[in-house]
Each structure stands twice: as structure tokens, then as C-alpha cells.
Length: 111
Length: 115
Image 1 (cartoon, rainbow over the protein chains, first blue to last red):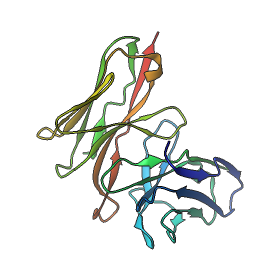
Image 2: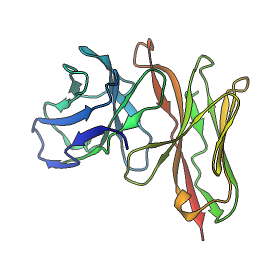
Image 3: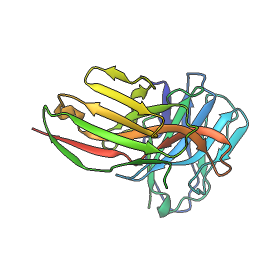
Image 4: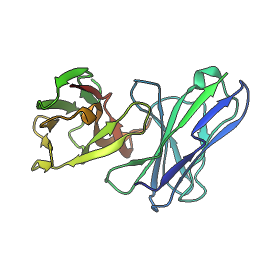
């Protein structure tokens, strides 16, 4: 089993609230990624990081922000949640050019 | 042209049959290749890496053709539990600047094994 964890697993929140999705890995991987995936649809990269204090936006425009203050921790923040943010958010990490390991995901619903 | 292309299916296959998926990629500089499996409402999980010489893991065989830029996955003696979405994944340049490397996922091929 991969040592990468996401919390919460499920979140229902009202419009306009600020939320932070947590992602932690204990494998010491430098590279970490956030993907967004709607049911039955493809994964879209929204943020990635190559190490501490390194963050970049991905291919899909997102209103979220990320930080990487510690190697093991890569939280994603939405300052003001909207119904269009309803989706599944998947965090992943990898070392070098090897495979990526995924967390179990956070299923977010904004009402 | 999308970076990684797969036939979305669905592939409806009887139990015990052999099924094959193909995937094409556009970046000839891609260095590593994978097949992932994703069950409904779950996270993707690595099925197998794909090596240039081809590799096998039980009932699963993966092949890479760098000249034609395609990857294949063969499943023999399919089981009901093989029903899932299979994602072709390629290491390539990512991000708006295209200067960093990461994994690009295909849309996935949906496989349904029927009893």
C-alpha cells in the first residue's frame, strides 16, 4: 500500500467557504501533484511541486492555490468555494521517473 | 492531437476471453510508460510499468513500440474482477510552460467483463 494520505475523504460545504484539502506522504518523494477528476472523466493536472517551496500550475486552470513548506505535505486551498468546484481531488507523489502513487482522494461537494 | 490517446470503449468482453488495448502518445522524448487501473470512484493504481523489451505480469502483457509511439496492454483469460477503466500514462513535459516533467494520463479505456 502507498503511504500517501488525503483528508477529508468527503466534504460537503456551502458556497463562499474557505477550504483546505490535506495531502501527506511518508515516502520522502520530491514530486507531488494535484489532479481534479469528475465522475467518468479524465484526470486533469491542476498543481504540481518538485520540492519544498516549489509550486507550479498545471494544465487545467484552477482557482485553488497550493503550498509546499515541507516535503511530506502538499495542501490545496480554495479561498471561496463555488458549486463549480464540486469534483474529486486526487493527490499523487513520485520519485524521479518512476510511477506515481495516489491518495484515496477527496470528494468535494459545494452546495 | 492529444498527448496520450486511448479508445474510450466500452469494451464488453466475455469472461475468459483475451482483450487488448492500444494507446498512442505524441511526445517522442517520453521516457517512461505505465498502465494504471481505476475502479469506479476510486483512485488510480499502478497495474504495471511498460518496458521497451515488453514485460509480462501474470495474465497481463505490456508492449512498447517507440518507433510508432504506441503502447499496448493484453489481458488473457479475463476475469470479472478485471472490469475497470485502464489508463495509459506517459512521462512527458507538463504545465503551462512545458518545462517540467510529469505524468500525462489518457482518458482511459472502460472494460466490462461479462459472465
